Amino acid sequence: MSQNTHTLHLFFEDPVKLKIGQLVYQYLAAGNTEQAQRWADKLGRGDLDALWDALWFNQEVFAEPDHLTLRFDTGTHDDLPLTALEALFAHGLQAAVLEVFYDQVGETERMHFDSGQWVSRQAFFQRNPQWLPVLEPKAERSGPGDAKEGDEDSDADHGCSKDPAKPISITQLRQQEAKRKREAQEAAEAIVDFAKAMGKSGTSPVQGLIAVLLLRAGLKGLLQAIVFTVVTVLLFKGFWLWLGLGLVLAVVLPLYYMLAEYKNIKGDDGDADGDNNSNSSDDGKDDNGGPVTVMANR
Image 1 (spheres, rainbow, N blue to C red):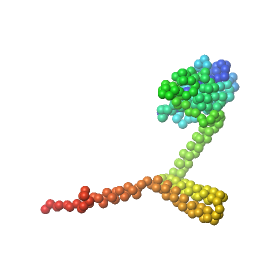
Image 2 (cartoon, rainbow, N blue to C red):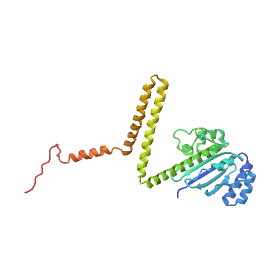
Image 3 (cartoon, rainbow, N blue to C red):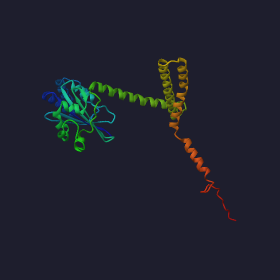
Image 4 (cartoon, helix red, strand yellow):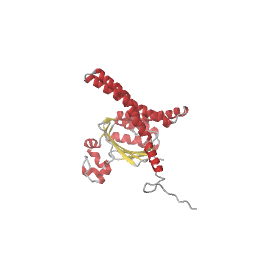
């Protein structure tokens, strides 16, 4: 079964918070929720569900003198541990790096977090240069900036980094991920409902989908005609001229886009048929284009 393997590096503000976080996760990994709850209360976060997802499995906890590393597996469609990161940043976490290996596609992705925000790799190491030897020992010689051109070892360390266009809070990122997942689920359900409705009406789902695509193409042409009419009427003289031209476009453009979409869907079936007919007409001729004479044996 395919799964996603998560490696989460946690860097706390002070050694006390680090030790408490270590105890919380070691007890959680061992299944001792009573002791984990005790230390979670000391951390300031009494809700274990916010720190630990019941869907995680193959959990491992590695305690280092200066940071804590969690490793666990999830299903391919499970969420990133953003809820846990959000809770930890509110209770003593200073920085974190999440690395996810997607077994289904064989790819690795790394995200950097600092002060409760998802930031770029470069911004992360500019603020936390002390963690470069820990996270990317091969890239240390090149500095926290970009790797040297052609340096494959250095590139292997951070080439998988996923950077945001601009820093974004973990809370906002979690909300965006939840919205994206919800919209994807709704889209999948809509497709299933559409197929069921087509089946009940006796219409092929493929034909129904073609009708939707043609309708969308027609609406695109109509929208362009409306925009053209409004702009020209407002900017140029000749109200009735532009209005009349807009009405013509309101008919022509939807038909044009619908015809183009229909041709894209159907492909070049007409050309293929023409080629077949041409080949058939050549069957009764020799290589020079003349009729073939058949000699019958008597």
